[in-house]
Image (tube, rainbow, N blue to C red):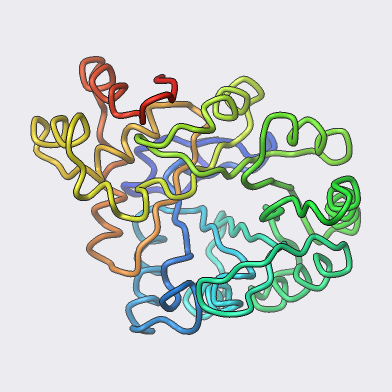
Amino acid sequence: MTTQTAKGPAAEAGSILLGGDLPVNRMGFGAMRIVGKGVWGPPANHDEAIRVLRRAVELGVDFIDTANSYGPHISEELIAEALHPYPEGLVIATKGGFERPGPGKWEMNGHPDHLRKELDGSLKRLKLDRIDLYQLHRIDPKVPADEQFGVLAEFQREGKVRHVGLSEVSTADIDAARRVVPIVSVQNRYNVNDREWESVVAYCTRETMAFIPWSPLAAGHLSDATGPVEEVAKRRGVTPLTVAIAWLLARSPTMLVIPGTSSVPHLEENVAAAGMALSAEDLALLDRAARPGQKPR
C-alpha cells in the first residue's frame, strides 16, 4: 500500500485504500477554491491556480477532490490543464448532482439522465476514460433515492466509474445506498469545532470507508480560532489551521483530509500538518473545542 502512494510531505499523514484497492495519501487537496468568488467563474489568478495544483502533486498529494459544479466546470478544466497527462497514482475524484444558476447558488438535480450527462462532461473535461471516485454531491429529495444510486451502479458496470462515494449523508442514507451500489467514501461537513456528523465518522471508521471532511478548516475561520485550538497552536508553535488538520488526521485512520486553497504558501502550510503528531494532552484539550451539544471524540 505505502509503496504505491506518492512520496513527499503529504505522505507523512499515512495512506488509506479506497475500496480496498486504490491507495492514496490521507493528505489530499480540495479544488473548490481554485475558481472564482462564489465558486463561480475563472480564478482571479489563473497562473497561481495552476501553480497550486502542480505544487500539491510535488508535495506528495495524490488525491484531488473536485466537482462538476465548481465553476461550474472550471475546476475540472484547470486540473487537466495543470496536470494532464497525469502522473501515475494520482487519483482525481469528482462529483455530480448540482446545477449552478449563478454565483453562490446551488440547486440539486439527481435525475439519472442529468447525472449521466454530468459524468460524461467530467470525463471529457478531465481527459479521463474512467473516474476513480465519483461522488453523488447530494441525494436529491425530488428523485427516488434508489434511482440515483442505481445510475451510479450503472456507471460502474459500464466502466466509466471505478468507485462510488456519497456526500452530506446520514448512516441510514449510507446503508440504503450500499444495498444498491458499493460505497467507498463519505464526504460530510466536519471539523474540530463542528462535529455534527460524529456518528458518520464512527460508521466509516468501523466499515473502513474513507471519511472526507469538507470545510475541514471552517472556510478559513479557524485561522482566527480562540480557545482550545489557539491554545494548542501557541503551545506547539504552529497555526490554528495546522492544529485543525492534525486533529482530523488523528481523529480516525480512515480520515482523508482535503483542505483547499488558491495560494501556494497556504497549500504548503496545510500539507506540513501531515507531519504533526498531537499528544494525548493536545487531543484531550481539543475535545473541548466541539460546539455545545456536540459529542467529543
